[in-house]
Length: 353
Image 1 (tube, rainbow, N blue to C red):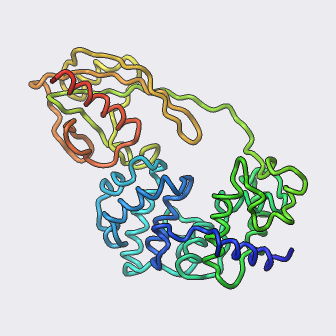
Image 2: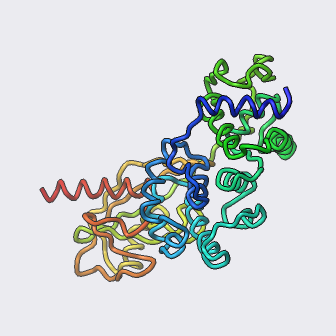
Image 3: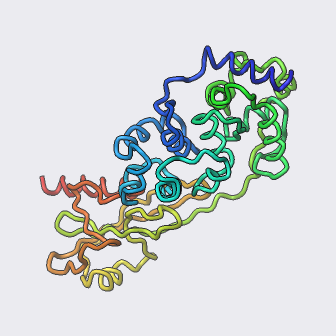
């Protein structure tokens, strides 16, 4: 089968079975860009409600660029991989300031924006501008690795290069946007990681992995390493219906989000004295909460400590605040931290009742 025939079959399948009603399938590069960033390592059904809420708050590049980072992170809370949100905000500022609010249409310019690599740039330019660019997201890697029996983990340089060659040669010169959506749809709905529906695949007739009865061997798996387990103590300092929050550093996990103070074990009393000029009382340790990141697990030991009214010394500022448990969050909060705050709020409400 020629590369042209591959694209022809895929487009014919897309015309009958492809997804054409997704909320970002509009003639607007800004909306396509936001969706592509949200869809990185996140499934469509998860993204849709976040995307719709995000668009209501930030309907265009100017609105996103002009917004405070806190507002952007707040609307991203729950999606994870918060560097995506920070880069989205940075890129919006670049587009506003350097491109007069118009999304660039040159590949090199798009790749130069924070948080955008060659595959994401190719997807945006093909979907929004109809330009011929190959893409290579996770779904596309799986389709091509199986169809051409390209073995090995795609994260290895040689394997990645072979997949890019396949992606480039298969990309047609006509209907590029439809082709881009089609091959992503094929990987997401038919050529899935487990239980692929090969009988429904438009290119199954000459899929090498299928012919070799080796579908489950492609793409190759990432070499296994022992998964690290880290631990931390988070303090829920409570005072008069409010909990003390600190903003995390702009880089690293949960960068720029509001969080609970993290301490080494056994330092709660010292922290209360040093940070709040107060002696905490009624200190209670909850059960450990495990949160999984992409590369390690984190065991969180929550410790609740009550602070007397007269002792509360820290005023609200840009990097610290007393957040009332009955109020909306001050900005973006990481999911496990939000879960702990909700649990605390429930306990406070029960005691008040």
